[in-house]
Length: 133
Length: 97
Image (cartoon, rainbow over all chains, first blue to last red; front, top):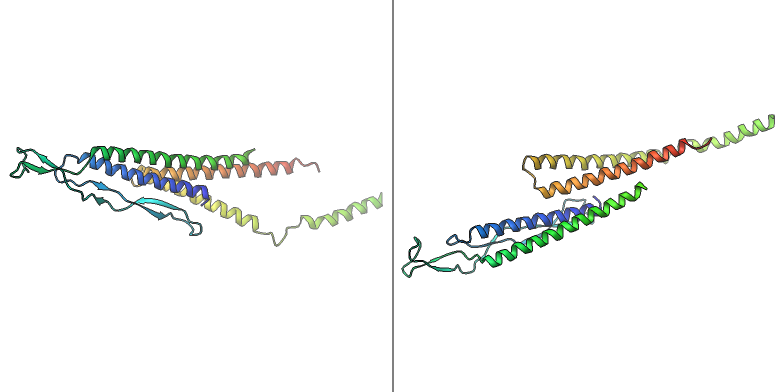
């Protein structure tokens, strides 16, 4: 596996990790109104890509999901079936603004990885194109 | 006339060992070309399996795109090398003898 090939593999792993992150963001947004829902966050960790071991490339992968343990929001709705004697019930701790910002960040990182992928491909193509003249 | 003919025969005889195959180099280019063909076939095989897996929904598109670009680059490399080899062969064929 050449250097440019491993560059492309690293970028592909980055894109995969960002796609997983976006999936969890969309799960959080979908559950924004679910009572008692705790938002999920995805940690990233470095991983070794399959290779010959020498000068081995490393990529990224998304690790196990971590639940956000911050306090759930108190929602006042006496008519709700889960409401206690004060008329409050526990909603989710999803902040829509935070989730949208997270989704946008995932999108930008995805684009950066895509750009690196394209760059590596163009570099190898122009290198091979040199042989054709 | 006799002298020039024997001279030509002698220089031809002297030049003959140059075209004999070198025992040290024997197998060198052949085995490396074989290795190249082997890794080329491996890359194509990988692209094939990931394309099949993506069609059945087993692989994610990122792996498919990476495998297909790798296969495309491998094919382009092979075509460029083949063109160079054929060109060199034709160049030898056109050599005035």
